[in-house]
Length: 295
Image (tube, rainbow, N blue to C red; front, top):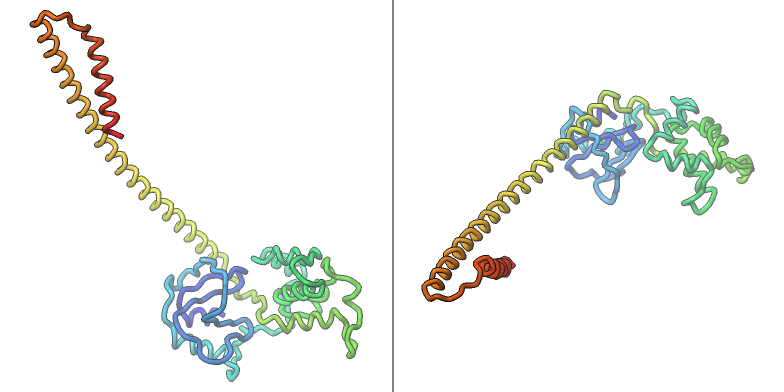
């Protein structure tokens, strides 16, 4: 598996299960099959979960790798290839995990919720009990390497196990359980490979880089937000200063008007209205004018 990653030398991330890799390249797939063993190649009509857990030491960009893609397809996938490495050295039927380890890893995997639901005996989401049996057996096939005996032992411990498992259902004498296991193994094209697990230091480095990236993004966002607020405050301060100047000008005009009015009243001998009353009345009217202009 790692030789393929190194050969393609493009953006690579850890798969959701944590047991494999996604390598994304620019190129076109050659004609023929697109999967063999636990190697799968797709260029259209396929959905997959992007984890963003970049593998350190490999490119962070998607690179053009047409020639390399053709070499990988020919060596690992093409049906005419002798392909000693097509299954990454996995011998179907061999298991490297104990029953306890299988359960531990299956429960901790990205689809652990599904496994736990089936293991407890739930058939929710399936049209029949038999379909739920197949679903659980396919998960067991992945973690046991397709080991028929170990799958049988584990299934009998699950909540889905029932008397029907040992009933003969076929003319050749095969039981329901035996045929269910065989079908599950046939439908499983990828198996757990211990040596493909990402090293712990690589996982930690990837996690640390992701956390640093998030912190950087957050700091950049706050800096942009702060710059916008500073510009807004500057604009408001300028507007406030302009209004204050306008008010001071009006106060000066009112004062001059009042002084001139008092002076003229005294010269004509008229009894003037108290200064404070007139000032308040005029100031009220001026404020109304200012308010209407602001509106």
